[in-house]
Image 1 (cartoon, rainbow, N blue to C red):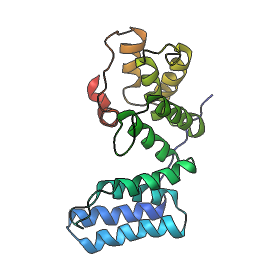
Image 2: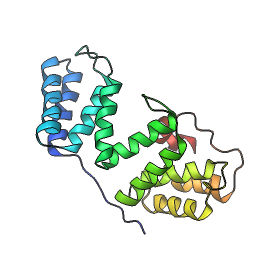
Image 3: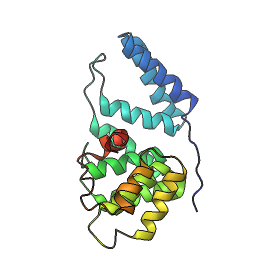
Image 4: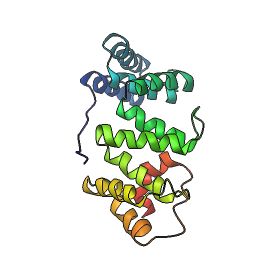
Length: 197
């Protein structure tokens, strides 16, 4: 049985991200640098996983105002360290990178599925449950397309009001839509899946 939990970012990472956001909006390199330094301090001095996760996202994106190009290798190293600590956001992000084979990750649907189910079991992450249900349902491999497991995952997502979960269940699981979704980019799909239904 799954129990939903809500996660919030640390106050340190929230403050740092606000500085970075305002710095980007006002084109203030000093404010961006202050926010980025705060994330790094939180990561290195306080072992703040939220700060480390946000630092990895900042490294992956780069920053035009600061003249920083994207640093995927650094971002992936931070993400890897967070994965070793079973940090949920890192688990979920890594799964999406594995599904898409992007950002320095080799495409690996089985590993992604394993990570999403780990996120669901350890952290009651309903979004992970939804994506895992979709992967299982869309799979052609009978061992992955486990009807009982799909029903457990999609029901958990629906009960936790994940957008698109009940529509997906109705259209693709209950009605056994044989065309499937044919998702080209899982990250984009998870960010915009309500438009697909």
